[in-house]
Length: 228
Ligand SMILES: N[C@@H](CCC(=O)N[C@@H](CS)C(=O)NCC(=O)O)C(=O)O
Image 1 (tube, protein in one colour):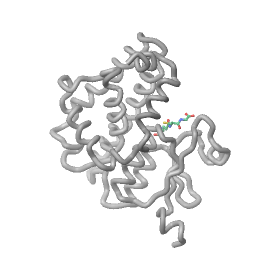
Image 2: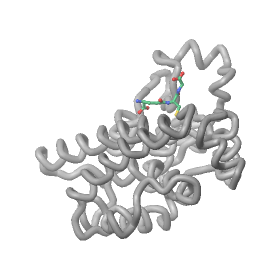
Image 3: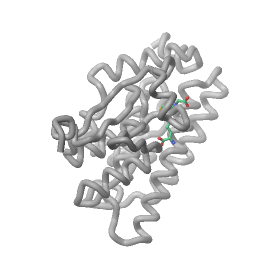
Image 4: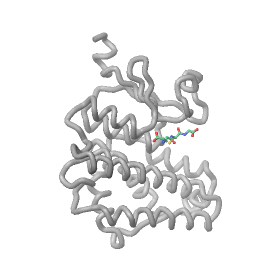
């Protein structure tokens, strides 16, 4: 093992400070207490080396030696498999169900993007209604908690925490769901947002950057933020 591997475990996560998909992997790495290095890039002006190694031009990337892994769900499974004990259930059916809800969470992040970028109030309300419908679905499959699978933290929890964090930040501007209507989701959100690996998974200036990002989009949400 060389000196670099000793310090960072041979893992480099290529990141963008606001990316919820990156955050999923940071949560998993922190939960596992894995050694890793994080490299931030500006997605608006990515460095040439990033263009060379990122097949889709997207973050996160996980560099493991000379190999490059992309797609947050794939990265998280690699981290999970190489840092026991596993966060995925042992039962193949339950594991597949977990993967399905991780994928569903990615679709919800797409809805969140449409909320942030909605050009006008009509588009904003439509995007909120679409996401609310999906969150109602999730409410229907959540159990007593505290986590998605019950007592044990899982990759589903890591995948959903970034969305739930952003929905809480947006609540004063756009209350996508009410805790009274979706109490299990609200409780899950509370548990996840209090977890150390979730709290520490974003940079200290995250809230400021998130607000700046909304304002830069110049859409209906930016107008609500400016007026608040
Ligand atoms: N399916 C991908 C989505 C990753 C993604 O969309 N990342 C965004 C930042 S949050 C990105 O890199 N966008 C750059 C682009 O699309 O050009 C994953 O789960 O990793």
